[in-house]
Length: 342
Image (tube, rainbow, N blue to C red; front, side, top):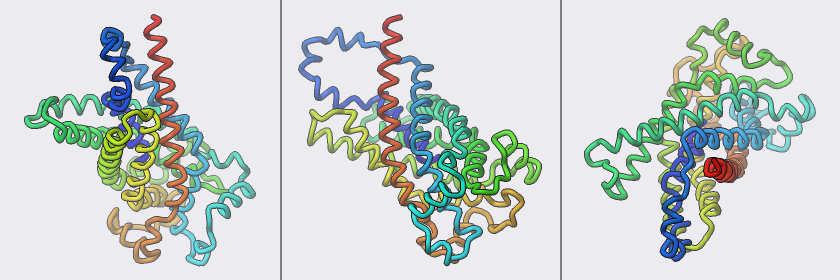
């Protein structure tokens, strides 16, 4: 979810003000053809949200195998002994999934991922614009308040929109985690059965297990991602102003995703384990809340335990962000062309 928030907000900033490199590259053309640039059609709100949602769904589908491996590594420490965990690797775990569950099992839970991705992206984009407009009414954060005010509005708006979207779509994220964490014994038979079984076994509050860790991680995740992304992009544009803006966005977005994942991965791991607490009738492992769970993992598995599954997460972030930006830009160009034809 943290990666999803990063992608949605970065795409929004690209659409709103990420054309600086392209502007530098086409400076002379703009001088000669101001009227053409001025009348360039803008993408409407609904197509904008559609492009972001579809791009996120495509990205999540393409990187689903790595996402599932990340989840499987993250939850190993709950019901596995240390000897078993020492013998795991990405290749060994991937081979086990194929041997025991078949190749299609890499996409287990992907349907609910897509069902979560579409409303999450839509809410993120919409809430980001609304929060940004509200924040610009605050003294000191006005639209013309300078670079610092602009960055502050983006950081606060991104964090608030991420928290809003995460809160409203969280049950689907929890169901996705539980479906993806199932191995050869399936307790949940699908999205609707999982929602019903969780409410029956754990009560309505069970749908929000791990929400605290999610909300605690969303803000710092987007803050780190934006800071790294904007700093790298600005430096790149100064040093190489004629490079493709798509290339700049792909490279800087991927690096910002890696930095953000490294910073917030322990919270994501704690969130996953809290989501699986009591799943399928299993005994509870963590009984002391967010910080108690964090301390329990650190005591029993060490610092390395808090980063269990970080390697497939890195492998997922780079192509995931790249696919999102490429799909988003392609759809945006197509939809803009359709609107201009109308």
